[in-house]
Length: 130
Image (tube, rainbow, N blue to C red; front, side, top):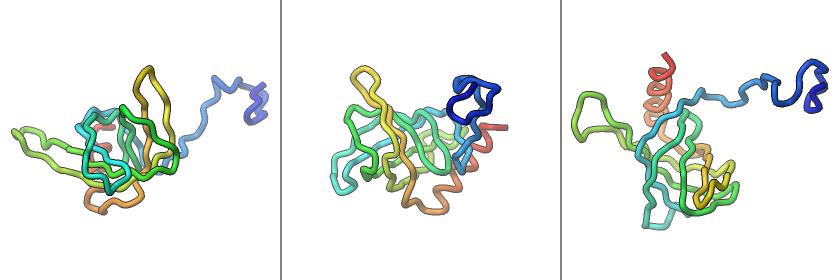
């Protein structure tokens, strides 16, 4: 019996939980720079793990706490071009953090992002899902 919902048919590990996210996400490795707090001038570079119109996850060398503000800049290359792409900037809030060996996997939600930048991400995700 599932002790999380009491359905009586499945264990929690087998249960198909509904997706709570507003935006679909895809695994994609894109260059990302982040700063925290957003006023700090020095950025750290890494790559995204997955991305959606609502947020992004990435690997970090530093620890965060849920609720921390993070400034992120994601570089989305344009196919069939050399050294061209779109830089997407957003202010995000840390939602979760998991330590993996000596680094951290961080999940952030965009709290301040231009509509045009969110649209670029959403279109990219839709293309990847087709």
